[in-house]
Image 1 (tube, helix red, strand yellow):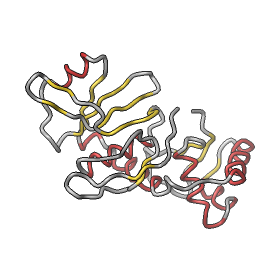
Image 2: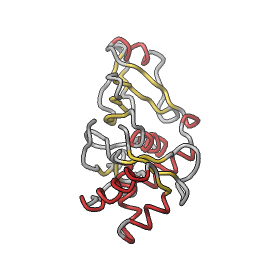
Image 3: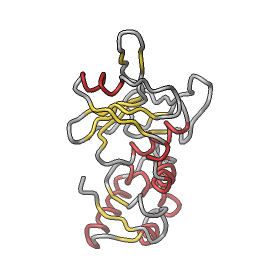
Image 4: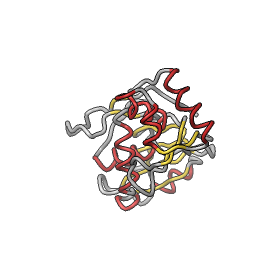
Length: 198
């Protein structure tokens, strides 16, 4: 697993800033063509099968046209996935074959491929991408989870360090030390926290 320092997303070529500003598993400079691409990157940061991802890292050509896909994603299956986000630039018809010729896998994501609940949870967590947890706080949470097996979020907040509880828990989730379901419902007091098996 590759864990980089949180990186701040650069201003795009259109002088727009896309939120949230920070990333966790981005390798290189974060830069996005649209808010939709930024949203897709939020999902990459909370996907436990993703080891790292990078923005527009490689170009492909059919001999006359050149295309820079949005992302290259390294997953834990050892494969590199080249990902385009539809709706920004025209996607050339030849890109999937060009990617496959390099021994990579190609994916085209649309807005419908971005689940709204998971995206909201990911965006909420990434507000704390720069927060550094202390060893004492991490151990307190991990020991409690080891003893209980799982705990509700409200229980961990009550035992953590006061106002730092949410940043501590969020940072630990982002760094895959603990897990929480991000798919079914928005993170709330009854969300269940477990130690990560990753």
